[in-house]
Length: 76
Picture 1 (tube, rainbow, N blue to C red):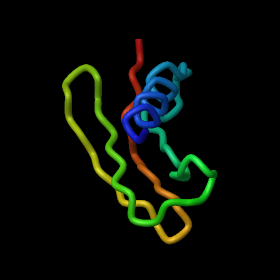
Picture 2 (picture 1 turned 180 degrees about the horizontal axis):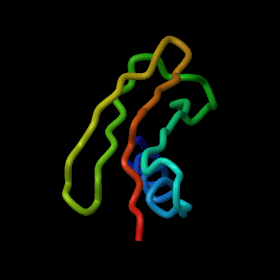
Picture 3 (picture 1 turned 30 degrees about the vertical axis):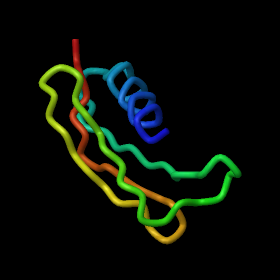
Picture 4 (picture 1 turned 180 degrees about the vertical axis):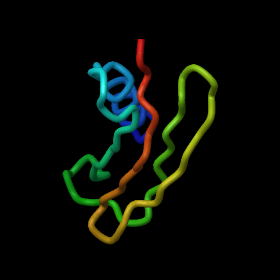
């Protein structure tokens, strides 16, 4: 389940257009939930760059929240 969430978040960030003069970094925030929509504390969330396969990890907080900051955006 987390794998699907990570892939979705990566696709959103990497597909976001970046205008000239704006930052080439973004952020990702989210909440990990179980199938019953309850927040999952302590879940491991992995963010993977699909081009160079680098990974970053986060652990969800007591409310299931997680955050990745300073995520490089793909600029074409």
